[in-house]
Each structure stands twice: as C-alpha cells, then as structure tokens.
Amino acid sequence: MPVARPQSSDSRIIAHVDMDCFYVQVEQRKQPELRGLPTAVVQYNEWKGGALIAVGYEARSFGVTRYMRGEEAKEVCPQIHLVQVPVARGKADLSTYRNAGSEVVSILSRKGRCERASIDEVYLDLTDSAEAMLMETPPQSLQQIDEEALKSHILGMENENGNDPKQNVREWVCRSDADHRDKLLACGILIVAELRKQVLKETEFTCSAGIAHNKMLAKLASGMNKPAQQTVVPFSSVKGLLDSLPIKKMKQLGGKLGTSLQNDLEVKTVGDLLKFSEEKLQDLYGINTGTWLWNIARGISGEEVQGRLLPKSHGSGKTFPGPRALKTITSVQHWLNQLCEELSERICLDLDQNKRIARTLTLHASAYKSSDSDSHKKFPSKSCPLRYGTAKIQEDAFNLFQAGLREYLGSYGVKTQGSHPNKWGITGLSVSASKIVDIPFVSCWFAHPFLCILDIKEL
Image (cartoon, rainbow, N blue to C red; front, top):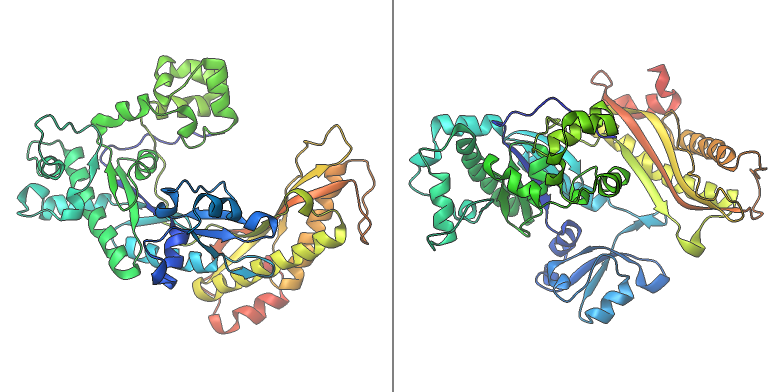
C-alpha cells in the first residue's frame, strides 16, 4: 500500500524526462535509413510474428499498437519495418537499450540530482540549478529565450489575446511580478530545454519532459505532450489537472486500491478525493494510505529524487505463455540456468565498473494448476543470500524454485527430477539481484577471483 511521505516544498523544481519510443530510436540510430519510416521493435517468437514492445510514432499513425503481434501490425501497416530485439541465451537481450539509456543519464546528471527510474526515464531535482540561475541570470533579464523553451506547454495558461503561443510562453517565463515558485519554474523550463537539446546533440535521441514542484506532478506531465516536448505544471494549475485525471491514471492507483476507490467511494477522478476528510480516508484505508490519498488529491508529494545513476537491482526474466508453459522440472532448470547466466554476467560487470556487490538473490515465478480449485494461488517468491559465481547462482535459484513449488502445491507430491509431466505449468520465471552496496575497498584487479571462491556473506 502507498505510504505518506513528508509534505513537499513548493519551491522544489523536479523534472521527469521520458525518452520517446526509446527502443525504436535506438534501432533507428543503428539504422538511420529507418528514420521517418513506420517502425516497431518486436520480441520475436513463432506465434504470429512475435510481440511488439515499442512502436514508433509513424507506425502509430497507421493504427499500430503495442498490443499487436508482428503479423497483425503488417496487416494494419504493410510497409512497417519490424526490427527484432537482440537475442542471447534464448531470450531478449536488452543490454543495447540499457547502455543507450546510460548515455542519456550521464548528460542529464550534469545539472542536478538524478534518479534513473527505468531504462528510458529519469527524475531530476533541479532546485539548486534553478536557484543559482535565478540569482545570477533571472529569466526576466534575458534578451533572448531559446526556441525549444518557447515551445513549452504551460498548464492553465490561457490564450485569450490570440497571441502566438510562443509569445505567451515568453511573457510567462519573463514575468517580473511572478511569485518565487513560478520564477523557479521558469528557470526549470530553460534548464530542461537546454538539457533536452544536449541529449539530442550528443545521442541523437529525443525526449519529453514534465516540470513541476514534485515527482508525482512531473511524472503526470511528461506524457501529456509527446514527442520531443515539455509540459510545465504551475502550482495554480494543480487542482485543474487533478480534477479531471481518472483515478486509475495515478501511479499506485491502477490496481486494487484504485478499484476500491471507484467501487466503494464512487471516486472517478483524483479530484473527487477532495470530498473526503483525511480522517475518513484514514478510517477506510489506514493512517498512512489515508494520508497519502488526502495528499495526492491536493498535489502534495514529499517523495524525493534519490540521486541514483545506477539501478537498484538487476534482473533477468522470461515469459512462457499459453502452450509454451514449462511443465517439467527439467525445462524449468534449463531456463533458470539461462537466466542465472545472464544475471551473473550483469552483476559481475557492475562489480568491475562500479565497485558494487549484490547481497540478495530472489526468484519470482507465475504458475497455474491444471486440476485444482486453488488454481489462482500465487507462486511464492523466494530469496536467499547471493553467492557470486554462475554455478552457485544457478544452484541457489533452482533450490528456491523447488521450495516455492512445494509451497505452491501444498501437500501434493512434487517431482524434482526427470521430465515426466506434472499437473502444473510455469508461465513466467525471473531471477533478480538486489540490496546492492558499494565496496570501494575491493580492487578491480582481484574482484572476480575473490568473489567467485567466497560466498558474499563472508565479505
């Protein structure tokens, strides 16, 4: 359940930068002849040409969506170019996209505290940079405003005088009578526009951004005007934004909590929560979640940008839908070995490059029972201390799976060897390494031999 954070400061300047159709852009950089053409990235398998995982804007204009298979996309748009995700160990290899995302992060982090939220999205705390700009070169003193900044979308800004929209933005940014919050936002507009231009210059990638006083609002704004644009949320526009925002569109309200608000309280938009007192929401959903709901209805969020350029965890997974479900222990062990080999490679690379070690190995699986009334029971996740070395990770992951399967099946017998079919199927497997910590005292030249012969708990 969501947890309430300390209340946010309206003088913070937070940006959420979201890459535009990032996987497609990465492939178009490798193959420039695809630029401007309808393109999609496909995770290939034999069933209907594989699953689309990214669709370029040109392909979207023909009606292609991420929910289609490759063959369906070709029916809608015969001229579409389908680029296959690289494959390693029998599964999609996303390292090309991760590395491209790191290029972007290195540029964005030049101007403020940076939190990498995923392969293609980043949060930035630009408060210090905005304060410095306001002191040294306030927007109202500038003779010229960059064209990219003038294309910003400022929520709540009316165009009653029929001016050119860019002129309205210029006037808003350069107001001398604005309050401190809006002056900082004006600085944020200029800073983010320049960063986005720098990303394009150095990487050839376009990105969109949301700029606001907290992470929640910045995230909501970044997807409003895409591609290659930025959207700003002044404090005065927060209520209007949330009054019309469907409750399920808010982060952490897409699941059971959002459904409960819809069904039990008849809440349709985030703004509808304003009808309820904090005490009422606390009574219904607990103190922490109730306060969180009360806060988000008012655009309040104290969640801070964490200052993290590197991922909090590493993971490797694969799905086995429909007839491809794994139904034998032998097949499960085969795929676990493949996933663990990739995970081992990634954590050893992290160790070499960043002097970090992971302490916890976790196994997740999704499963079904073919003849049991309790077929919707979830397969339990299992964790243990992580030991470096591919063979050790494979051994531990398989033991975790066996323990999870025994718990999942309850008192029923579990075949742990051989290839005889069982009355269960595995539709998804993943392994992850987490609780990553810095180890500046481990020298790069002996890191691998040391960790491969010792369990991590011995360090």
